Length: 188
Image (cartoon, rainbow, N blue to C red; front, top):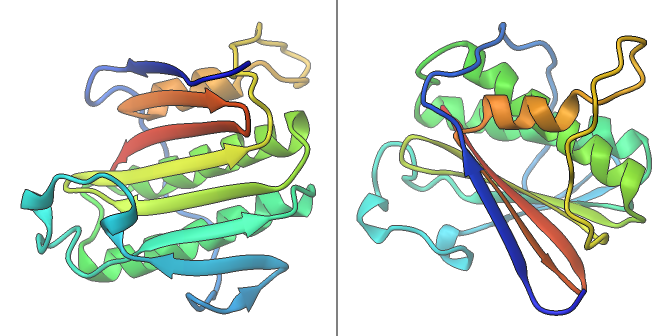
């Protein structure tokens, strides 16, 4: 597929809630951790609404970027890196509802698991605070956009993409020859 293909969807505010946080982790921004290359970058790399710079949420909290080779254990690594980002974010501003923490970690897990399963590595995740939430981008090397599958009661799948749409306020998929970026916005 050549060029760019962009798909967006959104859900009504307040739709979908979950329980409280589970795991803990320590990752230092800018150092090597669990086989991932974790670096902090300023918000300037992504298009942002400049009127929110300096707000309690965006403040001086840098974007977190982590790259992984695309192996199964990288799903756990991505979740732990995301949890460290949320720990840092919570020090600047706490979540508006306890379930937002788990929702973000669940979406990170679902999207990275799908990237590992359906695309040859490497994969990259980017997390940054927004005025009222978190913007997550998962990049993989497959240019095939995700598609919902039928739910299977035997636990063999079909839930993840539906779950992502239920928990996120906006979901966009941008494809090109190098792969795809899945952009999701979650409340915080």
